[in-house]
Length: 143
Image (cartoon, rainbow, N blue to C red):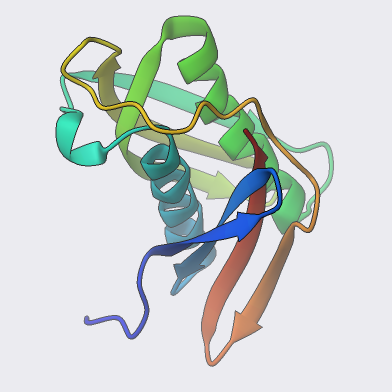
């Protein structure tokens, strides 16, 4: 099925940077938001899917925006603690309060072109909207 939208767009926001991610459903939105964040961290053409990690994010309440933030924060945690740069994300399990995914990438080395150093995934201006049968999410990152 062809899509009528890009997986994500980069947006400028004062001293921060953000993305607008798109998806036909919430699962695809989560995957595309992850891809958007990864593309801010590094030139993804320089990152290989050499290693795989399972990532789990939980929200205390059934809230799509909060679960999206928790998911992105867990993925950001990989970068900060393991120096792991992801290049692909696949959501394998999803319910109202939890998302589980498989993340492919590799540890940072000199062959990877690093871009922004994301300090944090912010709650600032987070929103998910339904538009023409698709989902659209805006996320801002502190850099």
